[in-house]
Image (cartoon, rainbow, N blue to C red; front, top):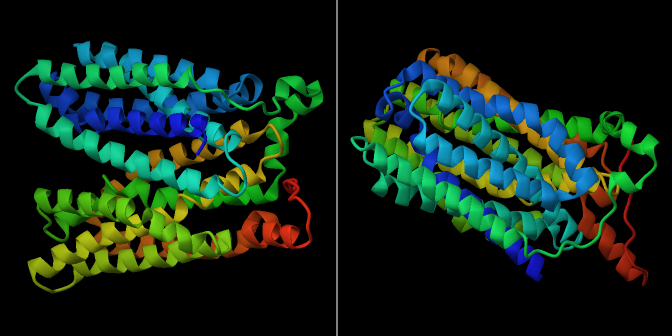
Length: 423
């Protein structure tokens, strides 16, 4: 890795570490510690999603026009102000405004950092760069949550203020790290003719492969990430009788599989068609939902049910490890030159939509409609496989199996040329 990429990875780890301090404890902080009630706490979580949906369409245009680094710095300062304000807020209005600032800043970080990885990597190194990003994000979240859990005390507001202050400090430290990054020059929409700037969203929506990838991405995030802390956990508690400690173990198993398997899995997926890898993830997640079905609907012992439920989260982690070096590089390869920020922001917007809709649909189903819940998301997982196979038909060889395209060019004694995205 070059110096710029090392700093970007440090930035990913620091931002995840800071978020890990506070995200698991937001509900308790707002509802109980500040005494603002469950309704306000639920609104805070909704504000995070709404803020992201509002700012991401503008973030993509800003990244394309100004570059990812200036946009990232603004997002970090905004998130730091939001985090610190949230730790000091004592009224519902102050809490919601602070959450909006933190949510907006946090949402913009993702496509900005992803675009910086694209700009600082080559086609040969991009999959490993995104795998490293995902690895460090999960490690940072896990370590941050672990330390935050030991610092927090539900009887003392000051302990939560400390957590949010640490989170703000992580974002500001990241500003210091990022200003030292020397980004390579890449095309900006501001340097292109005005017509190309005006038609950027139209161009993206006209890219059939990108539209299909966004649909697939929505199903991926809806059926997995959107269920982790809502529908699946509610199902585990209500249908399978899973204790809170076992639920924590399941979440830890998910993180552990990602951390341990990430680079072992990378060796496998680097030489496979990207569409086939995503299709395989759908099958793995289908097995995970079958295991969850056994945990809640089977008639085994409580120990077997707990083991099956933990296996569900572990299998989800294996699928996530396969997706991290596959989906993000594919988004980058579908983007025309200079448009990576727009495409990354569009895909992040799809992710936020799925994460907003997923809990709203899965939460009530997981808590009360146990069998329909399992069947529904089993079918969604199989749908991932079908959509991935269909996507593969829209991809060029360089997009679906870039390693093979590069090998053929090298064999012929030439240099690989970028393949334009399909329109």
